[in-house]
Length: 271
Ligand SMILES: Nc1ncnc2c1ncn2[C@@H]1O[C@H](COP(=O)(O)OP(=O)(O)OP(=O)(O)O)[C@@H](O)[C@H]1O
Ligand SMILES: [Mg+2]
Image (cartoon, rainbow, N blue to C red; front, top):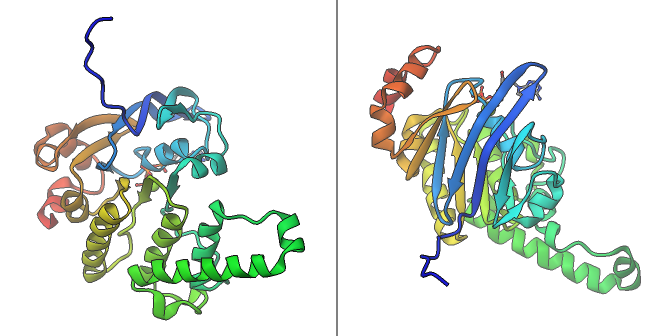
């Protein structure tokens, strides 16, 4: 056998991904390779296909073409709940929470993904079921402390401020114990101090939970501040990939933003 250097496996790999919506090619020839522990940013003008990429990775939408591998397994064709169980969690551009449930109950639902009681167990052993519920409630409180939301544990999710709801959504995603966390515009609608806190929080959970993160974000200060590598999408295609410094200096990126309503220059001044 020839001496071949062992290649470092990627946590997530996609190649030749495409998604067509009735004639519109929302994603075209998308490719990505993410190593374990990395924080990758995805930027691009409105409608560039960023959220669609997340929908493809999480199985919400089937790709028209291409493949996606997570931890070496093909995940194309798997149901969203299977992909979640394998270790991919996400947040949504428009926050999705169980609005009428309490803050703690929202987190407990995430925790239950790996701890669901069978019906038999629930009926046959009520004490064991109750014991588990107590344990989940304790675990949920620990997570809420980390997100500085523990004092709000009994409040309905819908009563929280926008910034708190965004944090709670990240907490519920983390509760499913993912190895890959996908964040879709987590800073959207936040004020500057909430954004600052969010950046600290993302750094913290990245280390604490041994996470790999992909973050879509329009706020350049946030994206440049936390990502090691950034991909730029335009019309569904990757037009640039590199370090924050390389991306800021890339003429194709600047042009993509200048052609839209969000001049990159203005965005970069804030960075
Ligand atoms: N389910 C869908 N059905 C039809 N068209 C869709 C669907 N989802 C997305 N699109 C279209 O695909 C394109 C890419 O949308 P996508 O939401 O991925 O963009 P985005 O980069 O996330 O934009 P934004 O920054 O505004 O969130 C858009 O033209 C959008 O209208
Ligand atoms: Mg989007």
